[in-house]
Amino acid sequence: SQMGRAFKYVILGGGVAAGYAALEFVRRRGDATAGELCIISEEAVAPYERPALSKGYLLPEGGARLPAFHTCVGANDQLLTEDWYNEHGIELMLQTKVVSADVRGKTLLTSSGEVISYTTLIVATGARVLKLEEYGGNGSDAENVCYLRNIVDADKLVRAMRSCPGGNAIVIGGGYIGMECAAALVANKIKVTIVFPGKHCMGRLFTQKIAEFYENYYTSKGVTFIKRTAVSSLEISSGKVTTAILIDGRCLPADMVVVGIGARANTALFEGQLAMDKGGIRVNGQMLASDASVYAVGDVATFPVKLFGGEARRFEHVDCARRTARHAVAAALEPSGATGDIDYLPFFYSRVFALSWRFYGDNAGEAVHFGDLGFSAASSSPKFGAFWVNKGRVAGAFLEGGSPEEYEAIAHTVRRGAAVPDVAQLAREGLAFVLRE
Ligand code: FDA
Image (cartoon, rainbow, N blue to C red):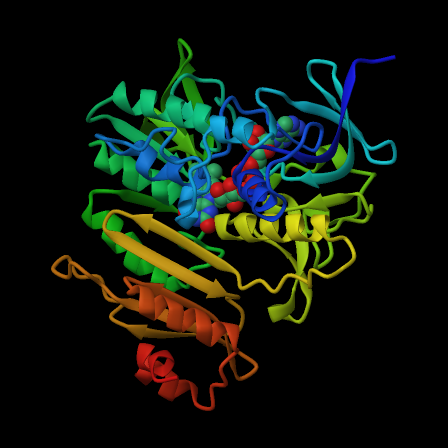
């Protein structure tokens, strides 16, 4: 028979959700006993706050480094180093990739040939980056072509930046990764050109007006936008990119390239074994998958959002990973159903340069802007935002430059779906609408 070990609970994946799940486990249950809880991660380090990789990690000086940003410091909670897992009886299997899963047999096979069996599995495999090659492009293997998903990627990006001070970077993609990396590149004194096919940056969330503010801000920092087109290929010489070629034939000199063209949830191990939905593993309000021994959390989970009438959604955002992980652990430790269904308020944020915004809810319906959206180089602390009004109620809210109280107020307004009798009045009142509630 094959070599193997058995655990009551196995968390597959060692990212944000895994770290928060482990802390929740210990809080509810105390230290794990032998054979009780195991975390299997392909990464070489204990779970960490992934958002730091596109922010603090890329600072030109004094950048954030492990162990400072292991989970759960992102939620102002305990810092869980590798030792913490050992001290609490949790088996942390690092640098271990699971290559196949047998849901009926309740086993996982690792890259080292070990069979791990479980009673209850929590899938927290997150997402992987999409590669240029998947869109007919090339160059991903080059020394100075960078993606950003994990520490190894971040170290490669830092090396590439350090090797071309004052040089040219081409950023492919105008989403979170593209925009945050562009800001980091500027801070590292590298000239940035962002190329993406959409009309404006952050196309899935921002309105044209909101995007214009940020694009103007970036432009004032020396960033060039090339929109409504794409990079068709990269010219590689001696293993390094030298030029990015656009589909219209334009050639852009490149000392490095950063690619942020999206992600896919890591569901492959469970295709054909668990029900899938919207690119993720379909779970119920307890984060339980179509097999009663399997939970899914974080980027990989598609779950019903009460606030959206129970509609199934999947979020690739850190707050969702933290909350779904805690919820799944609560449910798994109390499978009688005593844990109610998750009631999640979607929350996204980003920080670039001196800017910082938060978004709550759903960007569905009509966008009603407020505050001063016109970019002015003179204004050091811009404050503006938008409400999305759907069927007469506030469905979503965006705010740049808010105070903690203001963010709490917009979150509350979205959470309760405040009625909007008069859209024009809401536009006039702006933040006053939520603050007087
Ligand atoms: P996560 O990706 O964190 O962890 C998955 C883990 O599973 C990894 O350790 C992986 O190696 C492991 N794994 C996968 N398959 C495996 C296998 N077969 N065997 C073993 N291990 C396996 N969100 C936000 O709200 N605000 C922000 O500012 C940012 N910023 C940000 C920056 C960057 C650079 C990234 C990449 C992402 C963000 N995010 C974000 C998104 C946020 O980080 C993301 O939603 C969470 O990390 C999701 O947590 P999970 O635990 O689901 O996946």
